Amino acid sequence: MQNITRIYALSKRNVILRYKNSLVGFLWGFFKPLLYLLILIIVFSRMSGIDNFVLYATSGLIFWFYFANVTNQSIASIIASAGIIKSLNVPVAFFPLSEILSELFNFMLTIFVFLVAMNWFGIVYSPKLFLILPVALLFSFFTLGITLVLCALNVFFRDVGILWTTVQPALFYLTPIAYPENLIPTHYAFVVKFNPVYHFIKLARTILHDNAYPSSALWLHCIIIATLSFAVGYFVFNKLKNQFISSI
Image 1 (tube, one colour):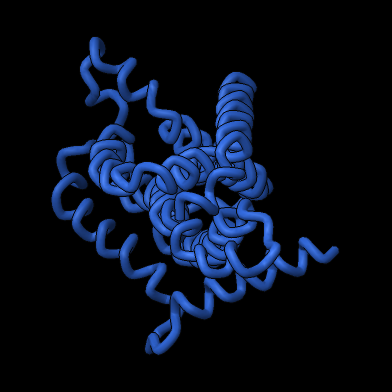
Image 2: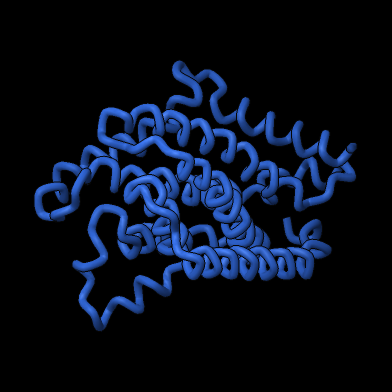
């Protein structure tokens, strides 16, 4: 119970600090995806050949920005909290975990607003939409695994943060968010499918855009990716955490 209270306090602190002295608060979380959506509509909508492009692109953007925001904000969480870690007996894993929980709050709000707003763009309300909750949970475990690895390595090699901000835009364009998969040349398709984010966005998009039940194979694929990501992240973080204090 004490640990839950600590994580809650850290998550609440993250939300408060993030929007301190902000005029519109958490609404900033909607502006960036909206700006990207407008750009994608201008550039890609006519050439994509996708039915209901707004719904297609938005269903990918909300998951992408959740992933991007968590990793960007968490990667330096250990370093930024050096004073607290050195002075208080707080498990270091709480800091990246609190970042993902505070961003998960924004993510769920974004999904709710998306489901309401997409009513104007033809989303089909059906019981299938409830499947987006386990998708969000799986994606969160996957993202937490990536976050733990980046966060731990960044303590020892500060270049990791710089490298991640360089790699991330490339990862965005390797994910079919604004373009259909059939635009990818066959001999390069394996590169896109090697991108794990692609599979989670495909899972979410099948529910939100296609109004269909994802295949068992796709569910299994995402479960395996999320499990492996979390297991690797947990292992790396725990292997290195005892050396954090001497390195921050």
